[in-house]
Length: 87
Image 1 (cartoon, rainbow, N blue to C red):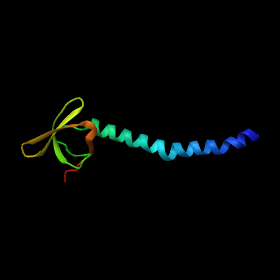
Image 2: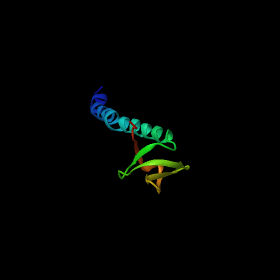
Image 3: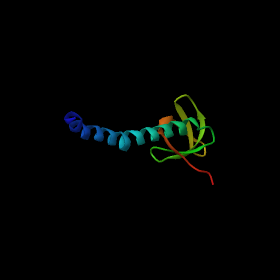
Image 4: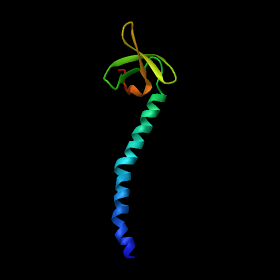
């Protein structure tokens, strides 16, 4: 009984670590993967550096964005952080 009582704080800290840090990060990562999988040509996106653009074409790991009329840049899919809502 004494061994269980001495290990209880460690078990509680591990559980708190799981629920406060690991679980939310996994949910956020899963949402990011789903967002990237749903992207397609014509979507308005924001990159990790804050550049806004429209997806022109997509490869397996890269995306070509048009950031101004006639200006195309190539990005990795992981650099896309947000999809802009079109009003």
